[in-house]
Image 1 (cartoon, rainbow, N blue to C red):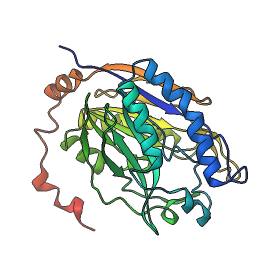
Image 2: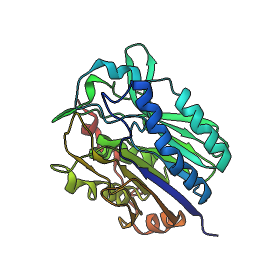
Image 3: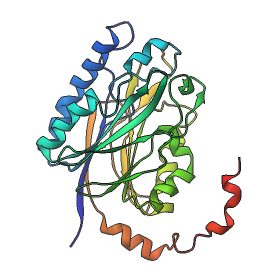
Length: 288
């Protein structure tokens, strides 16, 4: 019997930005802007919904203003608890990326995973932290320390990889080895240097590891930082590397697609990458 999944990705432009309200007001405006899209996903019968990287705020990392530390919150915490209500209401698994505060001065770029009954299953903390060309993330985030967990949800085994992580095949492989059937990659990336990689790297991960991916990018230019245009183009890709659903470049959008998880077994029975791995020969990969 086919294992059909209906999944959704939300790409969004900012509601308010720096100087247009307090940080608390900016977060509330961004959450409120998402709510109609979350409700729409639930009403369409979406089973797994993923939001964009640090979805409650602008992408503030082009600056180095410690005021944004106040945007961080515990995980689970207030925003995750609000999203649990929607997970329960619509029996919808949710991936909720937020700015996490573990304790004062210990902050992470994190995604919480909620099951279809609203249960908090756990979190992924972004492992690879960039610090270059306006993406000054080490000022805000510590590197993740939870490895590459995979979460058994009501509908599928789900993994998370966040933005800059996608440039590193090692974690993508670890997610596959840990059993992921779908990997979600919430991101914030602008037109320019890496744009050609957007539809290259993640299909390559999907092929190399035989799983589906849902890839999200935010939309629009974010002032006052103005580092470039976030070009949307969120998409789903299958284990053969085919992009089978894609969103626009320039508008707020809920992208919904259906796919059959049985394709994973079909593809892996053809391309035996897991059988033919030689981990005993890869020792140099873990050298400093």
